[in-house]
Every structure is written in C-alpha cells, then in structure tokens.
Image (tube, rainbow, N blue to C red; front, side, top):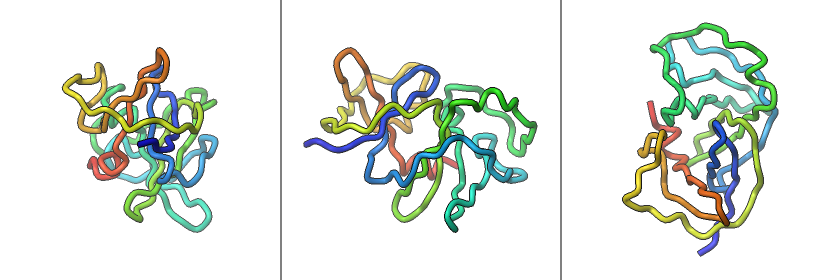
Length: 149
C-alpha cells in the first residue's frame, strides 16, 4: 500500500513522516522557551491561535548530545538559517519539529520494519525504512516523537 510522506533532512540523513499529520511548514523562528523543560524542547510557538510545543528531533533521535533538564543557554542564530519547523498533529495533539530542510512530499510504499537498527539514531522513534533508488529513508513514528518525554 502506498502512503504520502513528507521527507526532510537532519544532519545529512533523510527522514520521513506521514503527510496526513502535517499541518504546515514554516521557516525557523524563535519559540518561547519553557523553563525546566527537557533540552530537546525548543519552546512553545503560537501559530494561528494554536500553541505548538516545538521539539529538536535531532536531540530526541540521539543525533546530537542532549543537555540537562532546564538547560536554557541560547544557541547561535547562524545555526538556524535554512532550518524549518514542520507543524504536525498526531491524535489531535499538535506539535512542531525542527528540521534542517524539507526535501519533498512523495508517495512511498509502506515502511519495512526489520531487525536492522539504524546507525546513530535512537531506534525507538523509527517506524521503518523505505528505499527510493539509492536513498535510505527512515520513517519516524510521530506518536512516539510527541510522547517521548
């Protein structure tokens, strides 16, 4: 069965989420910090009257080192140029994820869940893999991203 996915890059690797949960793609913008939150929580973003918690999924996936709970040091603004925030909704719960860049929306066959563990990525968030040509696409489970904390 074919399903539509939104593909994006994180640290040069290709990831995807189901398109039916995607609401909007925004250029990166600062969000309101949440004191004493997990370091992967970028903050809260009010967009069109809906408040979205925004997550740094590179940290959730274990691709970058996580800071301690409550870490609020500001990061350099240059790091954010070109990044995007994808607003998603899973089971009526809205949230956003920070990605390096959005690649495309495309139909893909269902991901293959297997015994192969992704290198350098927390496997708890990976729903499966899809191969398109020479590209390996890791399909993420939106519900697990939302309820990681």
